[in-house]
Length: 140
Image 1 (cartoon, rainbow, N blue to C red):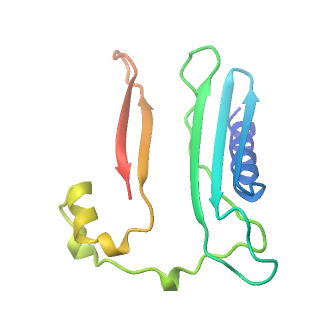
Image 2 (image 1 turned 30 degrees about the horizontal axis):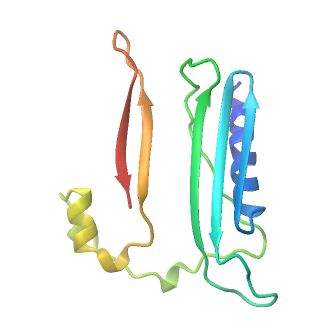
């Protein structure tokens, strides 16, 4: 079931990112497991020729219809079509020494000029003999 699950997750990500012009959502179901992805791209209109900067916001969720623990998601790939590019040379840089031993809040303050995005990551943790619980962490 892992290979089809990964394929469904990849398909959801590709459709959500590549096909959206303003906001797009897709849900893929394999048995009781589902992957849902939404993406929003701003601005809505892009030039017919040449490149333009965009802002991308996405939410991806993995769950089950029956409430059982979903299979472990090992990876998810977000792909862009042949016209999409990432120009990392234009991004500001923050030295690793500024980040060592910091909390997310401290790191965001120390390297505010290099922040290109932020969000929250959540995961369901399961351990033998313990009830499953959710953890969350800020992402930068």
